[in-house]
Image (cartoon, rainbow over all chains, first blue to last red; front, side):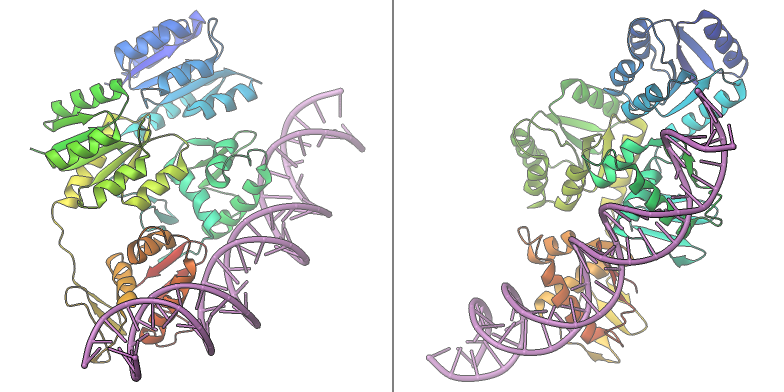
Amino acid sequence: MTRVLVIDDEIPILRALKINLTARKYEVSTAADGASGLAAMARERPDVLILDLGLPDMDGTEVIKGVRGWSSTPIIVLSAWGQESQKVAALDAGADDYVTKPFGMDELLARLRAAVRRAAPAPDEPVVTTAEFTVDLAAKRVTRAGSDVRLTPTEWQLLEVLARNADRLVTQRQLLQEVWGPGYQNEAHYLRVYMAGLRRKLEPDPSAPRYLLTEPGMGYRFRP
Amino acid sequence: MTRVLVIDDEIPILRALKINLTARKYEVSTAADGASGLAAMARERPDVLILDLGLPDMDGTEVIKGVRGWSSTPIIVLSAWGQESQKVAALDAGADDYVTKPFGMDELLARLRAAVRRAAPAPDEPVVTTAEFTVDLAAKRVTRAGSDVRLTPTEWQLLEVLARNADRLVTQRQLLQEVWGPGYQNEAHYLRVYMAGLRRKLEPDPSAPRYLLTEPGMGYRFRP
DNA sequence: CGATGGTGTTAAGAAAGCATCAAGATCATC
DNA sequence: GATGATCTTGATGCTTTCTTAACACCATCG
């Protein structure tokens, strides 16, 4: 049974989540502020954490950092509409995904399932597959329709970061940091140029991407 | 019973690993810095080494080189998020795999199993064949069209590394490291000279290589 | 309806990387 | 110590990749 910890200071939301998730056979525990949330996290070792960014006692990113110091438990962030910069900061701090309030229970459940699935033990052979192409991290090789796809070093690095974080939203800052290094965090147009290149080489219809998805204002997501 | 040595200066992580691994029937010993880690490595001859890159007394790659000088024990590296260059350096130095902190115990266990499994049977396929020539790793011989091909020692070493990693992209750093040793990692020029030599001796059309392929900016790949 | 901000696309010059040839230095061998 | 093979180093022309800029597009918003 999957255990979920919800940290949120709004009692109605807390109640609604508890009822809905319990009905779906999740085991739910709750906390109403950051401090007791961190304590519950350490005590109960849940399989997923759902975290509201607007807590009374501490900043959401602080909670995320507090958790990420010792655990890789998936974190799904809840944020009010318009808190764009907060969401980016949360993802940069190590959150896995976000849902904007008000949210539909279906969407939350979908993201929850994805997060749990992702947390499953990493595959031994680092090969990520889609219906269209496969990425072999070890051999540094991309195959599409039986033949190799030629990637430039930068294209490869970009794809590698996305593939290692498959299904997960990776912020532009993260990508720029990992591929170009520190000091390039504002060169977002590099991403556009190289994402275009990857899509041209990998997507069946580059103008309607199915695997290399844009999350406007946030970053990109690779969906195998 | 598989024996694991953990070198990490963070006591909580050390404790957590010891508890978790012992519960999974591993025999665990620990060290808190590089120097005593190397000593423990020599003394206890574990089956796997788990090494944190952020040690107080020495650089992680130094520890890896210290081990690789006399042992091929699998090494799994722990590194904080974002230390991409460190990870690359560690892999170049001879690490087998890496896990990014914070990590899930499941992931670490999977990588541990994979590392042990890889290390146990080392059934090297001693002959690699292409349509044009064959490479006998055991006999150190290359045959083309029925007769032996004469290779210089350096040419052979280069071909050997490529053949052992057939189909895999081998980085220039790795090739320089394995053939010329540490300290030559910037002499990419050597590679070009010797790759030219190999192609002249092995490729049907050296100016349009079919087996010894260049991946610009990254390295070379031997495709049997 | 035009302005704005984020995104996708394309192209061209600049920069980096590669292949090749050849000559000097070094090494092993006799 | 002379010889031949091998390794190192430099120079040249060529190819690939990176960077940058310009422009089209779309949604949002005043």
